[in-house]
Image: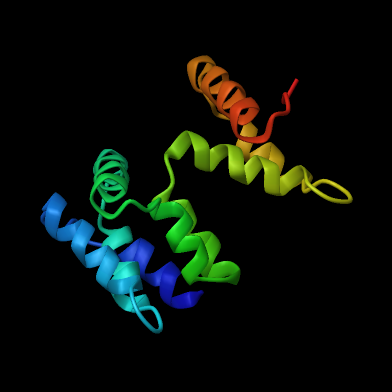
Length: 139
C-alpha cells in the first residue's frame, strides 16, 4: 500500500496516448500475474477526463470493463486504491459511501468526510448514482 500511496502523491503527468494507454493497461494485467508497477504508473498519471476516455476505449477495444478487470487482478487495500483511481469520480464517491455504511456499524468519520464539502450539484449526482449502483436511496 505504501508503494501505491507514494505513486499517487509522486505521480507526474504523463503524455496521454489513448491507444497506447489502453494497450499498456491490458498488457499490465494480461496473462499470469499483474505488472503492479505498470498499473500504478498508468492509473496514477491520468486525469479524471483521461480515465473516462480510457475506460470507454478499453471497453470498445478489449470488450472488457477496465474497473472489473482491475478488481479481478488485485486485492486488499491495493485493490481499493487502484479502483479509486480507475472509477468515475462520482461512482467512486458512491462506492466509498457504501463502504462506510455496509455491514454492522457505520464509519462515521469516513462518512462525514465523504459527505461534507460537496456542492449541491455534486450531492444530487451522488444521490442519483448511488441509487443506480446500489438500488438504494441515500435519503
